Each structure stands twice: as structure tokens, then as C-alpha cells.
Length: 112
Ligand SMILES: [Zn+2]
Image (cartoon, rainbow, N blue to C red):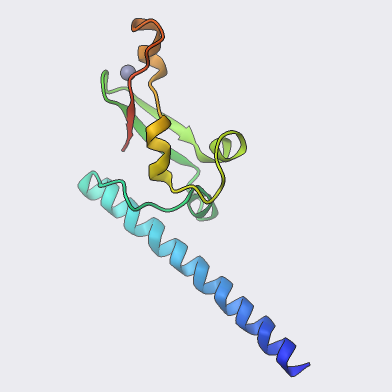
């Protein structure tokens, strides 16, 4: 019984430490991206961002500089696993605005 209680306590402690680590990762990434403009790697996972209340990522088209907002919860539901680092989304980001002008070709976008 004592061993089970000790194990439960250790699990709760570990979960709390993981939450703290995720919060530190989010904060460091936000400071780096906002303060220095990157680099985008390393980044928190989409789940870590969402758990901290960060549901959106701003992206900018490399061609037309249009800014867009990506909903991370929608990305998780449709395309990616929750443990996907945010920087890995960048490879699949395309500008919808340029799509019509370039007849289907869609230039890449960067996370800002
Ligand atoms: Zn564009």
C-alpha cells in the first residue's frame, strides 16, 4: 500500500515536472521568435503549445509577405500527431493567397 502511494506521488510529481518543462519550452520559443525572429527550431510540440493556451501560430508567405494564422488544434485533428514539433509544420505550409495568382503553385510560408 505504501509503495503504491509512493508510486502515485512520483507519477504526480513527474507530470508536474513535464508541465513545467513544457511551459519553459513555450516561453523560450516565444521569446526567441518574437524577440529575435527565430530560429524556429527547437520548438514546443503542438500539444505543449495548446496545453499552455497557445492555440495559433502566425505564418508569413515567402513571396507576398501575407500573414496568416494557423489553428494548432485543427492541425492536430486533421494532419498531425499532437507530439509534432511546431517547426515541422513549416515544410507543409503554403500560401493560399498566392495560389490563384500562380495557378495552383503555392509558395512556402515561414512561421513568424
Ligand atoms: Zn503569398
